[in-house]
Length: 237
Image (cartoon, rainbow, N blue to C red; front, side, top):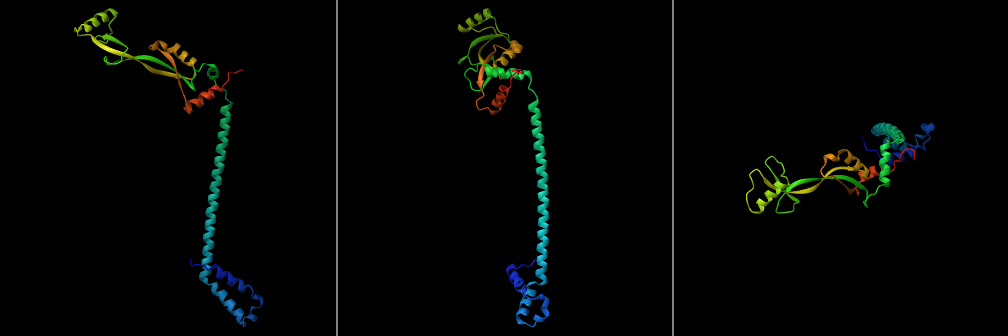
């Protein structure tokens, strides 16, 4: 495609527009008209004309591409609008559904329970679990166990401990072990009542269980669900 000097083309066209084209034959003998017409024809050579047509075709193609893109964007926008409308409808359906009665009870307990001066409290159930430790360091008690793992009774323990204190070897089947109680996490609830209900159902399987309150400070997920539960009212209130 040839480079077109649009300014020269415009000036030639403006000059040629002053010619009396209806009486062109009478004016051809005038040198000024002839020079203007010659310049106009030179500016509108076949190469220039083809270049203009090429530009027009390229612009038409670009316009078609843009129209196609606009149509696709419009289709996507319509699809997104329909999806948003469907989501809004689904949210309304979920909000319309009433929460179970148990959620209302949990919410009531969250609002009224003693949070033990703890921000966003988590009520946790723990149990005591014994672990073997070094007898030369911190421990809770000394136990004697036989080769089958059975713990000696009080009488046996006293006799075995006397042997140990007097630097005498105990019977081979007995082993002296230092143990320490540690707190082992079992489960977590939104309310203290939830922990009590759990212990009522499963406390017999735990060793020295107890309830301890921890904080959900800055735990956005936990706080969000807890606040949602706290906002649920018992039906009829």
